Length: 427
Image (tube, rainbow, N blue to C red; front, side):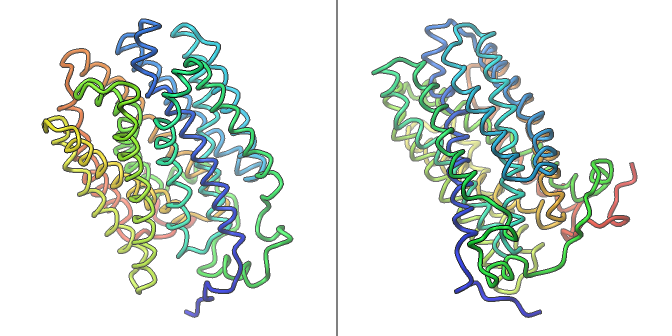
């Protein structure tokens, strides 16, 4: 089948992708601040390990609700307005942390933050489905998804200095207000490709190249009957908790295991999360390259995901090595592998479902992934309280991706497109 070449067709889709990248970066800055401030907040506000675990649990609970609710809102209202609403909610909640002095006050702020941030990925995945042809979606997803790594890299570079100079409350105020600076260019620039006055006819034809997709809206009840949805959901449920572990507990691990203070964490955390950016881009690039070489979508996505799954396995040694930088190397490999995996896992939604259902599908699977994150929060809090060690926790993380890939392959052996009346689970 003839495909339109990508050179000379225009660049607006990559500008839109850049906006998604910056939004994702800000999103992860807001959620990551609390993990770096954990030792400070525990000391000043007298939190226990269970208090912190419960706050992460509540964030994940609201995030799960936000994922599924805001995903549906984005499908109904459109990507432009849906993403704007999400950003306004999480920006306000981020600033609200500064007014909290008790666990209950932080709990309310975390609930608002999770609800708003839950709409980010459904809107981003839907945008990629609207603006990119199939062969570029994994790379576009990897690019905006790399913001999930830049955010955590940015946090240890600035938050310690804001904390020392102005106090921890200003960390939440400054990062929360930064989101508002993104909303204006998003509203000014974003339109659907067909409605965008600067998109050329050649770029629009390139975006729409590939197999035709159904244009009808698919009800949730129909979506839940598809094996393809449960394949992606299984992958999210089993592997998202590992990412939340890497986000919310790595600063505590470095402090507990290697005695690092707030300023001493900067270089290790920049290395760990900076490596994740490389992994995200490499994972998206590799599967896209394999497709261009003539591999099927099924083979290219799953081969890339298998490589990434194997890359997480060595994390089981991270709590056992004695040297700081040996542990950092193992954690960096894990974050890089997770993000390469995640870029392809998210892309499965747009590979197998029509564009108008992508945000809803992403919302459902994201909600299920967040439920896994809720569970890991309580498990980590319990294990640390009882043992004070990350050995068991990292052991669980090591095998999660291989198990997830097994379930994905069983439920979607060929990554077949989801069609009404076909490939349904008998519920």
